Image (tube, rainbow, N blue to C red; front, side, top):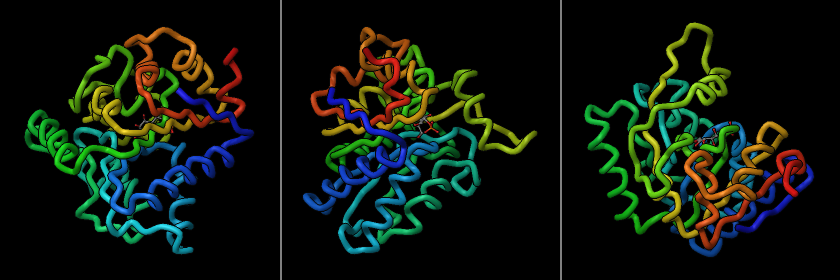
Length: 242
Ligand code: F6R
């Protein structure tokens, strides 16, 4: 696992964006694995700027998002599909038919999970997977206790994650407790993995990921098994590393 420690979140976003820019410059039809949450927003802005200055194009790109709330249609403002449209897809030259987010309103979520794995496979697999990390060490919605070889499936969110994400929901608004998420095995199949983390509240999770044992109670520790994983983190997130 390669670890890049930078001063602040702006430098992390710029460094992360450059990894994706280089990826698209060397393979215009890349298959990107994408994430939501606060952390990747500035990276997406970097990619939008790079497209506008014609450094990259998304015309031949395919994307697969990590996760989605189960029970939210893709038109719901808190759905991850809605987030991706707003933060990236609506601002770049991507063919939306080539963008995939697990279907939060699937009639048969279990079948939908199998279908998502098949779609990733038939796209040729993920070239580069972007990740954030939860305070509890989750990646995607693979909460602590997730199987390290797990595939895309329905996963119950922990109270810590529900509390962390409550900031995105209005008071009294329905907040799902279930999700569809790529599994840890699915993530580990990506050819390259880039995890971004910023801020002191991620320091314990980064410590467990980098220096802890490989264990299901810190799902991100599974990245120790990946031969091409890079953690791009700021000094605050790195502050507990020895
Ligand atoms: C989002 C996702 C989550 C987030 C994590 C960190 O698609 O998969 O694992 O990356 O919860 O979220 P932020 O960036 O909001 O701290």
